[in-house]
Length: 371
Image (cartoon, rainbow, N blue to C red; front, side, top):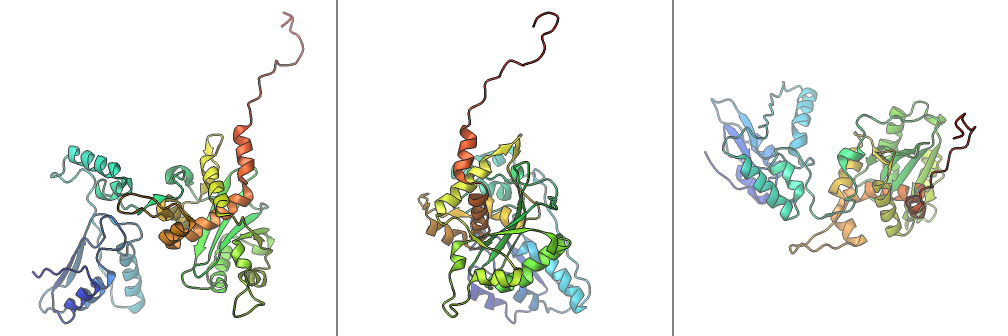
């Protein structure tokens, strides 16, 4: 057996021309962040080194459950799909999971001690992965919306799209344009129906490749639906290369939309969303997200966050949030834009402070007892 460290991209070159019969990748997912671990190229280059004669070639990956966005969560399904497309035969792959408590060498006391230690240092996000043996989510800083609870705010089944009710689309621009669909129901609930996000593409590409196909799939007779489009005010800015064109003009041309600018002040957007997430109606959350809307769920439960330094200090500024959150800032910004427009903070505060009416004596006929 040959043991090779793979912490640096240059280390991958060690596998080149190295004829082996089996590849064993140990702990490719980092323990506490998302920047370390073993790169997917180790799997790719390592597979090309499986050329030893006279043995059945195999690859094994052993690890603690990773962050849900880690490359190991997707590679198996992609590999199966590619094997069918390229007609290279069936790729045999098996996934083994050790249930919590099955390892006899880890006592209940140790698990509870580990859990307490992780909570004590503010890393409760690591409990599911390192203690309970579940795929989890790494939160690298202070969650932007701690009011959000995935179990509480996520619908138990796909949300219905109510015909005859206006569909509100929220938009964020830039190189990672994002669109989130929602409906505000007659009972006061806000349903987040779906979301799409582009990566290093323009708004026109997002609309043609993601938005229109989504609406064609979920909105039968798309022309019969009424849309309201709330956009980031920056999307009204004209392109430097073409003074006649802006992101809003693209929406008008491709969707026949009537975009309206969302709130300019970021604090207003953020505080409106926080207030919405804190409200309930008849014991149920006002804000309800479809279970398949993973982009929004992932962002709200920690993908959108403020950075934290080695001393545990938080930097709660807009610039720090944008830089630390990366891709997750875009769906969060969309939902914040919608919250500030549909549920203005002053209105929510009035509802919260509204005094209860004193019970009044019932009016009606007097009974034979005179009561």
